Image (cartoon, rainbow, N blue to C red; front, side, top):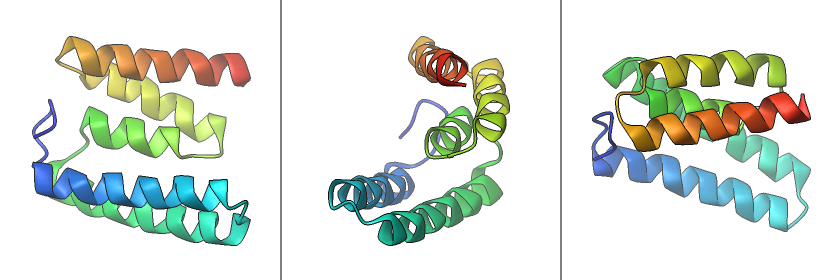
Amino acid sequence: MTPDGISTTDWERVEAAAYQIVNAIMMDDDVLCEHRTVLLFQILDELEGQYGRLPSILATRADFSDDPLEAIPLLEEALALSTDALSSRLALQSLVTRMIEG
């Protein structure tokens, strides 16, 4: 289970989709990467419908977003909603990285 309450089985779907995106990037296949990212966002949409707006969902969506103007508010929300130190640190790290790259 994630720190914010998503079941291990549900979160494994997110991990599998993320691995597929990384594999597409490693193969330098932009079309496949885009397709896999759409699938990841669909899974995140389903989980958000089931669990609500949780830090792990928001931060993952932000981490895989190409648009910093979309990612930064998601990370700020994830940070504000985080109730454990690890989730807070991860959201803050991603937020700082996005702002530097911004």
